[in-house]
Every structure is written in structure tokens, then in C-alpha cells.
Length: 330
Length: 254
Image 1 (cartoon, one colour):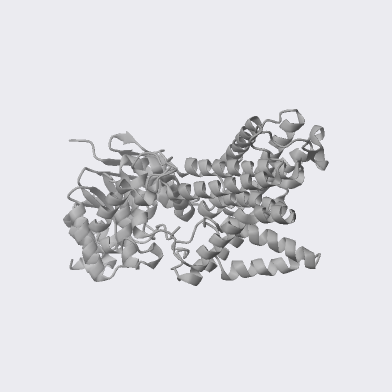
Image 2: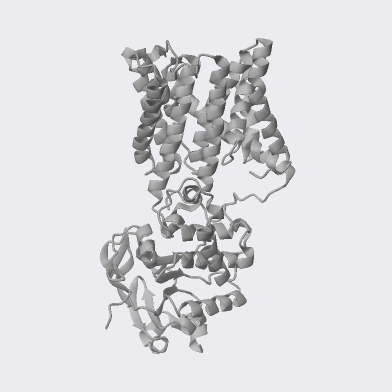
């Protein structure tokens, strides 16, 4: 994060300014459509940021990350429907359950590599999806309406759109900062080293599995937080929150914005969801336009929008050339 | 006599029907530079991988520094002071040279469940890493990304990373592979210095280097150790000449 004046920093500054001022516009104009859209964008950007931690920095391509959206969301929904509406209870429970789920899933998935890892994370997410659909007491397939948003006492009213928006923004920025510190710490070096060459990591003396598992749990927990926010945003949870296409959306956000970049997932979330909103106004088949756009990014901008903007200002050497073929089994 | 630093007894590894290591026994004493030579496919790299823990042995034992390490995972062997370099360069291409070595230092500087401080500004990691880079002559290339370093520099960096783990013993898998004659000469000089303070097990095809450096040599053919002895004894051994050295012009008048 060098404060140089380049296209990337300009864009990020402009985006942050826009995000901070958006509620002012909404309150002045009385038009809350954009505020609602961007609340959703911020929440999913938080989920994408958590995915970026394992996918971008850790090289763990989880195709089941939306599971934690659902787990966090259902924790809120189930507690609310049982009469527990205090956020001080709901949110820690949502985080703890997400962490626990990530621990169990991670323990099993991290034994595999490459396409097997993708498939097994997907399988777990689908299992949890059907678990949600089977919860007859909590709405099953139809989902569960949340009557009251999480209660944090009189000083923080989440039912107020502006307050809720700023809570989401603050949590997102805190998460981005946390992930940035994390990936540059000793822990982060181990995670990135294991992405790059796990075999060598072991040979210089790192027990890599415990670090990757910890990283996986941190990412799952952060995504659970995003799920708690999403449940409060929509006042509703349903299995659809964790359908595999949602996991796919999160991957698209990370890849589109820029893997292993601090603000990449936010940029990706804004780009994807705004495009979706705009294109679906033009045609019902908006994905036909989105598809080729994604293809272009993957083919010509490997580091996503963020990398594109970065390169526009000062061309940097691409550090992505593989030295040794990244063998699946090291 | 003191127990050897590294002692292998009856080490065997089979891949399907192929016996890559066949009942290998050898001992390397503290301070020795022990070279392993043998034609291609003799099982040299397999042996190194068994010693470093990447390949599990079918039978036999490995003792290092008085402890049985036969079934220890790779990272634990590294913690005990057994470091290896790879024949095919194995580095972290997304990182700079200094980052690479700092990671090796970090592996031996306590646990890495430290989530906050900037590891790239941690003098406890950067200073020893820089020292290791200086030692192999890469000090001026510290901030270059590994993907932009030359092949020879990769080989040097391999050694620097092994050194940065502050090992008692180095397992070097063809450190001179693909080097120019001048670079090889530089590597020989460096290994001669290193052998003053470290025990080294060296696999190398460059016979000139091997006979110049080694205290003792083991000859491996088809997974079996057919001879072990001083360079002079190995050179004079008729069985070795038949099996291997006869093909090597260099040694005939080396």
C-alpha cells in the first residue's frame, strides 16, 4: 500500500469517498435504492475479502465459501426465531459456528490438492445447503423470515438503513485492514509460501498444514460475519444463500477484482454487482455479456482490475511465472 | 569412536517392481564431506528424498544426531538440523531473493502464529537472511524477484536457504547442475569453506569437484552401495571402474 499517485490509488480513493458519502446522497434525495444495493455489495465484498485470504494468498480455491454465508445467516435466523434477538449473543454464536464448521471442513479438505480440493469444498457446501433445506422447523426450502434485526441496545439501531450501511462499511474496511496485516505478518508469509511451493516449505521446516488450516478457519469466520450481516440486511435466510452459484459469484468477484490484492475483492464485488444490476436492466440474458467480460479479464488481466490499474501506472514485473511446475502433490 | 552424525542401516525403497534403494547402509561422521556418485538412475536423488523425509522408506533405519528419524515428517527433520537443496531448483518465485531466505530463517525462529507485525520489516528475520545471501554472494541481488534471477543465482539461493535454517548437516543434490565452469569453481570454493563448519552429503556429477572436495565417497549403482572409501581408494577400485568410472574420461586422468 504505497501512497503513490496512480490509476489504482485514484480509483480506490474515489470509490471509498463514494462509499462514505452515499448515505448522505440517499438521505438528501430520499432515494434509498442505491443505498440498499450498496449495502448488499459491501456485505458480499466482505465475503469476497475473506475468500481472497485463502484463494488469493493461500492458493486454496474453495468452491464452497458461500456455505459460511449460510451458516452465519442461519445462526442469526434460528436464534431470532427462538426469541434470542440480542446481537451480543447472536453475532458471537454466528462467528463461533462458522469457525467450527470451517475447522471440520478444513481438516478434511486440506488433505487434498487442486481440483480435488475444489470438488470437496463444493461437496461440503452442497451438503450444508441441503441441510438448510431440510430444516423444516426453520422454513426448509422456503427459508426463514427474521422478525427483528439483531439488537445492540438503543445506541446502535440496525433497522436504520444509514446506520446499518455504515456498520457494514466499517466492518468491511476493518476486515480489509486485518487481512492486509495478516498476509504481511509471519503467518501470512507462511501462507503465501505454501501457495507458492509447499514442498519447499516443509523442507525448510514448516509444518504447513496447521497454518493453512488456521487460515481456512479465519476466512470461514470472516465469511460467517458477512452471513450475519446479510441475514440482517434481507431480514430473511434461505438455503439459496449458500447455493453453489453463490460460491461461484464470490470466486468471480475475487478473480475480477484481483487475487491477492487488498482492495481487489471490493473492486470485484462492486464491478460484478453493478454490472449485474445495469445489464439486467438491458436484457434478461445479461450473463451473455458478463461471460465474455470475465473471459477477457482471465485471459488478459491475470491480476484482475486492480492489477490492470496498477500496471497502467508503473509496469511491474509479473512475479507469477512458475519456476518449477507446481506439482499437485509435493 | 563417537557415533556418526548420520547413520543409515539397510535403507530400502521400492517403486512397484523397481528397487530404487537397495539395502543401503552408510555412515557420515561429524565434519565429514561425504559424496555419493553413481550413473544416472542409480537412486541418488531417491536416497536424498528418503533422508529428508519426502519419500517414506520400505525398510531400514535412519539415525541423525543420535535420534531415530526414520518416520519423522520433513519439517521435523529440518528442525533437527538436516537441510537439503534441490536438484531441480525449488524456490518461491513470487518472492524476492531476500524473502526466500527470510522464510527459511523464520521456519527456525519459533512458531509463526504471529498475525500482526510486518514480517518484511522484522530485523530478526531480515538480518540473518541477508547474512546468508552475502555468504553465497547474492547480497546485491537481495531485492530481485526470484523469477528474474539467473539459473546460477537460483543455485546459489538454494544453498543460502539451506544455510539459513542453521543446519548441522547439508544434503546437497547436484548443486552445480547446469552451472558454467566459472560458476562451478565458485561453488567448489564455497563448499570448501562450508565444510569447515558443516557436515555435508553431496551428490554431484562433476567428478572433478567431487574428488577435490570429498573426504569419502560412496558409489551407488542400481540402488546398491557397491563401494565406499577415500577418493584415492575409489579411484583405484576395479569394481568401481567397471561399473562406472570407466565411462568417465575426466577421472581417468583426474
